[in-house]
Image 1 (cartoon, helix red, strand yellow):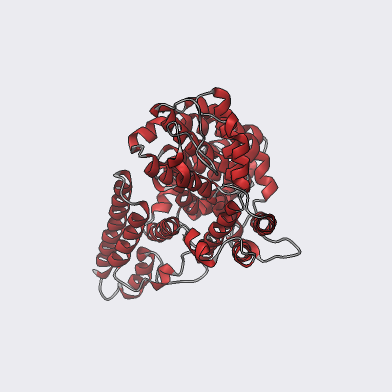
Image 2: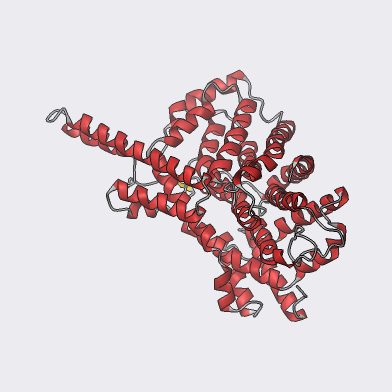
Length: 489
């Protein structure tokens, strides 16, 4: 793709720069409007500057990704009511031997859940738990939040359903679920171990807490408070009001207290109903997971599961739907438009055209250069649009299909084998996802953890851009580099 006219390139870069600054620093003194409004401002400027047309702006919004995120938010609300998070919190804190043990558990559970339920879902569900567990152990939340976000990104590389860009790659490359899984699994497992090692090395002193401090903290925060909290993971904030969407068991208990002296059997009936509803929630969630593993449409599967839970609940769904973080969905809409406008300036394509002769997949040096290009573009123009742009241009190759990023298919003089083609796609999946750990803006999972932690009313914590990047740069470079040779076509 050729560069757009100079005026469009300059204006498009200005609009993207404003979006990027507000996404990274949502409370800048000269325009403290936040990330959501910042993304809308960037999108609006792209249209006003005529970098893209209004029709192109609407078309750039990725509805399947928004549908997936909405569906998983609703499912997470019902899972909360079914006490799944209580059991998960118990698993994280059960016989914990201190901060180092807790950090390792967070990394492993985050990686596993991300491979099965997407990295965004894992971060939505687990952030509040991590904040409470950090408080229970009298430790700063930062290393645990970094562990959650980074492990979620690494773990999500293993399956086509782990993250949106993997879904795009798997569908368009026609790589089967099993082949995708086997091809990246070794890199993912080693990557998680390396990530844990880096975290332990960086925060070894921070994770040390003497026994006196632990005893004092155990008195201040009871373990039951960690494992039986009530919060809205999809809302990214702690509940402040009683609502119709509270847990059925908790809701019924107050009624039983008032009426048990009259009708002793009411308590049993309500408990039985709560157990049935809880079982249905788990069955629907398992069914959603099986459907995803079978390769059914990811977005419609999530939406179907969400609506099934609404119908099973058999009451007004308004209070539950009110918990959905619509501001996050709006942020993504603005981001899609802004990034699409920036891609139309031709700058990302110009970078690829310059690097393409040195980034051929059939040479070790080419793989290294290709990984570097993917890493840079994934952080500067978002990892999902980067993968999508490859898809849009993948069919133009003259000698087989070579991995593309941001521009035309490489016109290579040497034929590329099917194994090299598969490896190229898996390399894109691996690097574009791991690259999300480089900076706070690198992936949606990072932003979800950051925003949810910041908005938590009882355990609020601000994970800054610099606080993230100090860990993100070495972790990303080391994990990506060691994982690349382990990827098999």
